Image (cartoon, rainbow, N blue to C red; front, side, top):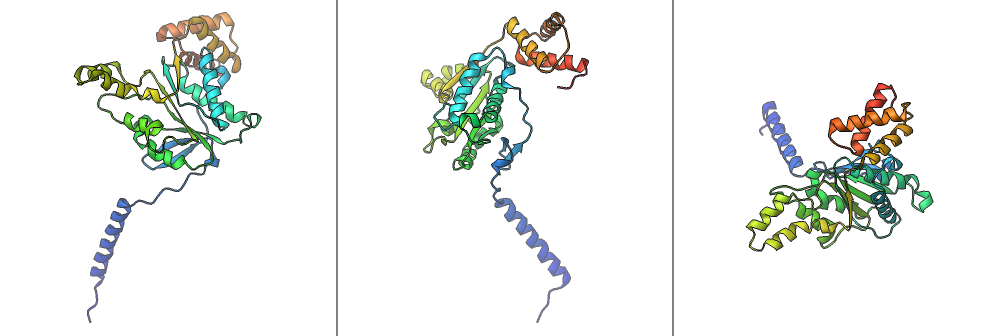
Length: 296
């Protein structure tokens, strides 16, 4: 009868460890379902296949968003209908930079959750999920995770656009409306973009010039934006709208500055930035608050 030596046993254990590690890499354990009750907002981690809760969302109160009244009313009403269990449209918020597109999505979500009971909505039942642009390919997986959940979900992608040979827009088209299962009834998709059709003009012109049937090539790409039933355009604000934003922030945070001085400094600030927008107004207010030693 032969017996293995300690050296043989060590070699066998080492080999078994390598086999175990290889199997774990090939067949990783399935992530545990996220407890949706821990937060109202989440970030989708495609690499891990999990939703990560966000306890403190970076957002602005809806009444502080100025110069976008029509877009605000339309998006709020659309979101409220969805939260109450009625039909609503996917929304594309497109246009000028810094005019509050992403802020409006987060503000509508917060406002509806804050007033849920008065609208006949179960408090905390409307969840906001952010998906990063580079993870759009994983959207079908995310939808499959949410399909049977009791909550209702706003999936939000900020600064969505596609360039060059990027074909992930096809996954988005299928996930929104085109697949056999279609979009789950408890999910709505909101996206912001600087481009109305999500694709750069030169990309569309290249398709037109090289395709056998130019109109069909362009239509195939432009049809992505058609998946959004609600289009909301954001345009550069006027000087009066810009100053209205500054005044609203200054009043909300109790900044003790004379109105004439505040306006003069705000206009100088926008001139040095070469733009007037909600983002520029907020950056100016942050500067004023810092100089006055006021915590926002």
